[in-house]
Image (cartoon, rainbow, N blue to C red):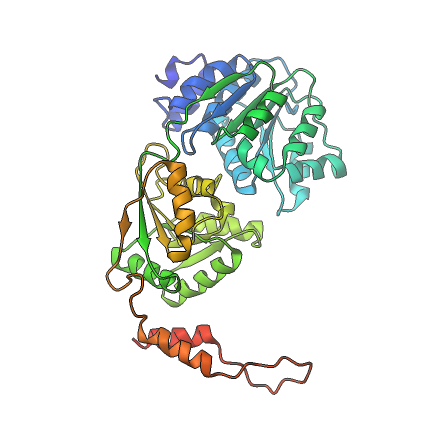
Length: 421
C-alpha cells in the first residue's frame, strides 16, 4: 500500500514524497485511515516501525481540513522523554513545512522562556513532556481548552515513569470533545487498563510481530566482568567499528567507560540523566554526524532516539529489566535496515540473560573471544594491580590537614600498566 492511495491532503502527499516515503509500513497502513476519521485508537507496534508518521500525517490532515483560527493550539502530543519530544517535534516540522501550520516542542532541562515566547506567538501543535507542560500551565497560564487531538507516545514508558496521573489531568484540561490516541511498544495489562479508562470505544490496533526486531542479529559474548571494557575497545579497533551505541546500567559506569575508552584513543561521549540537555543534544548530534565512534548511554537513551541506520548496539551491562533490552536493541535495525546487537555477559549476568531470552523467546548464540574465556588467568597487569591493592594499608580518614600527598589511583595505575604493553 502506498501513501498516494491514502485520502490525505495533497500537500501532505507531496511532503511524504519529499521525505522519501512511498510504501506504507504496516502500522501506517492500519492507523492512518482510522486516525483521519478522528476515532480513539490504542496502537501497539514495535519500535522503529514508523509510528510518528502514522499519527502525524492524519493529525495534520485533520487540522488542514477544519475551520479554525491560525495559531490556535488544537493538538497536544505527550512524550515521556526530552529526546523523544525533540525528535517528534523535528518530524512534525518536516512533514508540515508547506502547510503553514506551526509546532513547538517543550521539555525540561532547557530554558523555559524561549519555549514560552514561541507558544505565545501562536502554535497549532504542541509537543511536550509532562513536567514542562505543567510548568507552562502553572507558571505561565498555558490553556489547553481548544485541544481536540491528544496523542500519547510511548504510553508504556509513561506508565513506567509514573506519568499516568499527569495524563489523566491533561484529559480534564483539553476540549470536552476530543480524540485520544495511545501508542505503545508493548501491550501490557497496565497499558490495556489505561486504554480502557481513557479511550471511548477505541480501535485496537496491534501490529507487533515479534518481541525484538527481526532484522537485528543478536549475540552474546561471554567475558570476565573485569575485562568488559578491555574487550570492547579491542573489538572496536580490530573491526574498525565507527558508530557504536554502548549501553550501561548506571551513570557511574557510563563515566568510567568514557574515561577508559578515551585513554584507548576512542573518541566517545556520555549520555545520561545527569548531563544537561545541551550536553545530551551535542553528544547525540555528534554521534549522528559520525564525529564520535562511540556514545556511552544509560537507559535514558533506550527509547525515543532515532539514529538513521545505526549499525551496532552493545550492551556492556545488561539492563535491570528484561523489557529494556528490547528497547535498547530497538535503536538498530530500524525502518527496514538490518542491525546488530551484542551483549557482554559475565557470570553474574546469567540470571538476567535467561529472563531476556525467556521474554524474546529464543536462546541467543554465544561467542567466546580467544584470550577472554571465563575462568582464564587474568593478564599480568590485573594480577599486579590486585597485589598492589592488597599490600597498601587502609587509609584512615580523619578531619586533619592534608599532607599534600595524593593517594595511589588504582585506575591510573592499571592504565599505566596497560599502556606499557
